[in-house]
Image (spheres, one colour):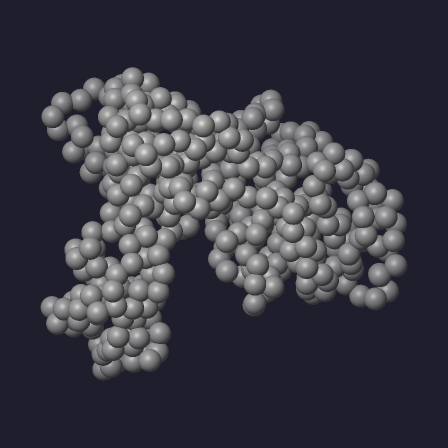
Length: 434
């Protein structure tokens, strides 16, 4: 369970990315590091004191040909929208600057917990430099050195403390799904089409503290929650140049979902950003459905659907397990296929198999295709067990985990899929020494 989300903000060259790397690079802290839309890391999952949380690195977002004030405003806006708490990084070498004062004035308006990290305090002689930062009115400054790791633990402690009052709606007994995709692919129209079906009862309940809109509803007596990430408020042209903003919104929605609908635009075709967006759902281990929207705009014959399917499979090779739905949100064509598909994918992502059945499939797989040898040593799988769901995760107890080559792991995954389908969900296979 994610405890909360924190954002690192501050003017350029104060060491935000160094502190970000320190936080997620602590040997006991890092869980995973998810790449952003470009090569910049903007979003990571970390762990501290057994608590998992997300970090937004706004330091990776830079704008060309924009006034510096607008860049700062954009970073703070992201923190305001997405984060439960904010780490404000300043430079202990430079002292308090006008830009620091401007950022502090913006952060005070957010009404969110702000942790003030005075960076570049690399030795005790610089310790006294932190006191002038009390003038920012943010709170007690924490002396840190991103380069040497000094004070990072204190900042992490403060981050965890800031999540104490975070309220989250988890809708434990409901099937939760979100709709993600690049701008203008028809996400909001798809939400409306799903909610306006016959037999759907909509209850208006406010969403979370962020602006993703959670809408609980019923279909044939079963409870669902659709999380719409389309409602991004664009304040002027500055946001239109920042695709990463929509990625941050999508990541927060993915985190709370059981199933993710990745929406493609049948009118404009597949774009590179579609692959980045879909990649987040895959990496998060959620159930995935690819929704090819605006099917009504496509000139088609009896071969078109198969041709588009082949194209999608080629462009999204890592999502070969995800079913594809062809729909038109505008005229609500084929919308009725989505809820049964969401149910199917959710069922498979939460499927738990008896240990004896798992071992039977793995044993048969070894008999059909024995593991390859490496330096004269062959992998031996003694025992297999499913250890978790969402996604289904299996552990193989072997003679040497390093002998489990990627290609053989893929072979075993395919055998599990042949036996149990697992439509729409990734499968994780890990090896441990017996």
